[in-house]
Amino acid sequence: ARVRGLAARAKTGVASRRESMSKRKGGSHLENALAKFQKVQQQSAKISIDASKDRARLDARSTAQAERLKAAADLEAKSRAEKDRNAAALAPPSHENLVATNWLMKQKRVMDLLHKFRKPMSTAELHNELGWPVDAPELWEMLTHNDKVSYDDTKKRFSYKAKHVLRDRREMLALIHKFPDGVLESDVVDSYLGAADDAAALLESGDVLFLVNAESRERVLYPIDDFYEAVGTVAEEVSGAFHAVQIPTFDPDWDAALRGLGMEPAPRRAVRNRGGDDDSDDEFGNRKKKKKKRPVNFDRMKVTNAHLPELFKAPQVDRVD
Image (tube, rainbow, N blue to C red; front, top):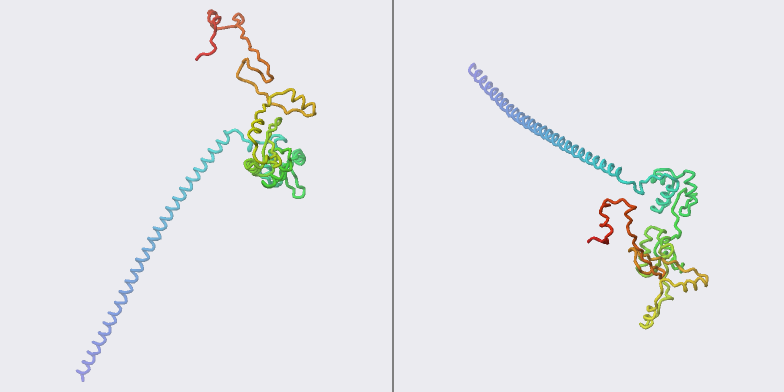
């Protein structure tokens, strides 16, 4: 029995030792796996921290570079603006930046501004564009009584007032046909923006023609009337006889006949010869007299070579080639 008890205790001890050994073996596997996981986690955290630091350094570098570029651009813009201000200060004043010093000049500036924009403008808008108020009593009186300026008392706005109210080329042509005796080109092109181009197009297309006024030297537009157009062709004998008639430049009898009928002849522009004194005819057909050269009186003059009078009394040359 004693032997059997010892054998049973031996078996129990072996089983307990085996169980404890198996427990210790299993615990070591878990610990190793946990240690490996923690190590990998630490490595990944370190990599993330290093990447964050590198990213921060790159961001700081790019931000510094952007700040440097911005500072350089600001410095260049300031230097360019300083150069422009110096150039503007040295340049002579132009019509736009010339300060109006009297009421007539201020009125002219207001009219030029209204003519440029061609839209109704309030006193505040004119003040912003011109830099000085336009509601002064003297200037207000001049603007409200100006034929080229219109003021709407309801809307409280100024606008440019042309002599003819036109909007396009069609209305321009219709207006010219209403004046068979002609209309000034300056009044037509003043009606709206681009009117000068439309007038030039009408002249180029042959719808109207222009003549220059002999007194004012202004261009006058006339309509083309089909009534005066020749039907068919004109014989060469007739056209040759027409062009063969010589019209004198100045005919006193013709002018006297016109005055006898109550009509004043158109003034003629005199053509003068500025080439010097010659014996050609003048504009009235009279012979010009040649001026005689007077000899030099050395007794009344102070000359440098007074001790060599023979140099001046000899025949003198007119030109040295």
